[in-house]
Image 1 (cartoon, helix red, strand yellow):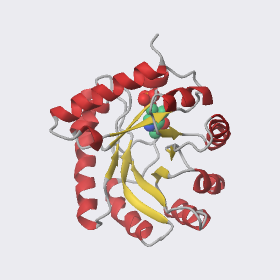
Image 2: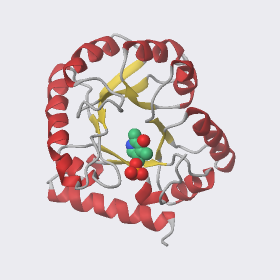
Image 3: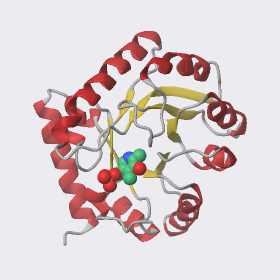
Image 4: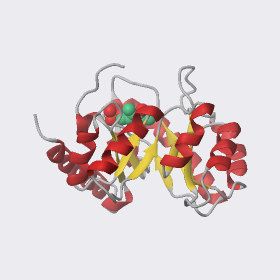
Length: 233
Ligand SMILES: *Cc1c(COP(=O)(O)O)cnc(C)c1O
């Protein structure tokens, strides 16, 4: 099996290829390496290969690894992204350890994150998670609720609303996600028309990211293709 460094290099060159096909600069697509369930040593290996943005889903696990990684790599410049479901009793840990949160989907979470963001840290970058395929099992607001939540987040100085995130319904054929990504691209344009700082559309995972990039994704969240498959938790 290839090393983490080799797989990162491969994913990066594929991103360059897909972006170029779309007549977009390769650096307009940011790679978030999703390291959930993987040990700190894997994060260190990816960092050594030049990766700087990492995504984590579980607060307790993430904080333990953030500590381990900072011991192995003092003064590292990793940018940590929280991409998992948010429980109210975990907002303080998220607000104090992360630079980005992709999964904000309710007013209560946003106000807690704002209140708990330390004064000496830059505003927390926030994405609104959209349940684009209206799945019972998934977090996220419905498309028609985006503008209302955006307006509220916009009023909180400790948060900077940067855009939208989604996880579309699973399909046997990744191409079948295209209509969902297209719908997100339209919502994103509407949000951009309203707020000038909106620049981030987080969508696409190991199996479907090229289709997401074809529909304007600016961040892709890739785990398996970099770190290998995960054991079920
Ligand atoms: C696990 C996860 C990913 C990465 O998924 P892969 O299929 O392993 O690339 C991306 N986004 C979210 C929100 C996740 O939970």
